[in-house]
Every structure is written in C-alpha cells, then in structure tokens.
Length: 107
DNA sequence: TTGTTGACTCTGA
DNA sequence: CTCAGAGCCAACA
Image 1 (cartoon, rainbow, N blue to C red):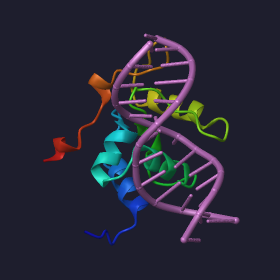
Image 2: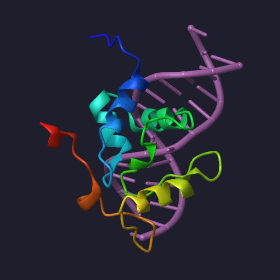
Image 3: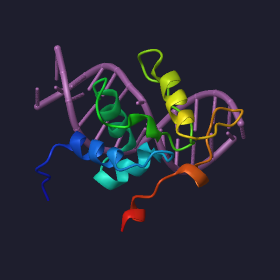
Image 4: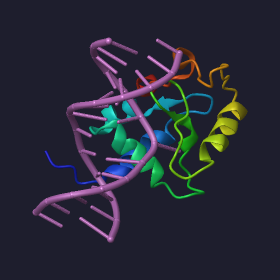
C-alpha cells in the first residue's frame, strides 16, 4: 500500500507527541512509521534549527545521546533534557524504564 | 538511474 | 561493561 504523505512529516508529528520529561528512541519511532532507525536519525539531522519539533526528546536505544556529524548539538540536547527533569547517570545515559514514552498511553 | 552517506539497532565475542 | 560487523531505508548529486 502506498503512502501518500512524505515520511519526514510523519516522524516529526510523532516526536511532537512526546510530552516534556519523557523521551523516545529512533527505533521506536521507526517502527511506528514503518521505516528503519537510520532513516529516523536522518530525518532528525535534516530538521531545521528553530523548528517546533522537540528533537531533544529522541535518543538511541541505549538511552544515550547520539553525537551528530556537526559538532556541538548533543551538548545542547543534554542540557535541554536535564532542564526537563531527566536524570543522567555517570556514564551519560538515562533510565529508559522510567523516561521512555509509549505512544499507546494516549489511547 | 547508480552510488554515497547518515543524530541507528541488533547480535556475538 | 566495550568493540566490531552486518542490515537497513531515504535523501541527494
């Protein structure tokens, strides 16, 4: 079955549904839109600065912040999440068992 | 149309 | 815990 809507906006729409203080993973979003984790990461990389999408709430499956090709964005992401009340461990990871958001919670 | 690249994930050692 | 390899899809030149 053909998808009429572009893929990226679908990913961004899901990210916008993540409430403050919680996070989701690339693989989780990829499953929901029917694609692969890499494509979700690529969509985040293509996201323009100053967009309405809370991109900081997307982390990798290990609960860690992924470094991007261009420098210092992950440092900003770290502070944004910490500002939302998310606690980071010594190794720089967060507890997904606590902060991982399930989209089923809205049903 | 082909080839390259990327903010990933999984599995095994 | 860390490290390495393979799989995977979309955008762009």
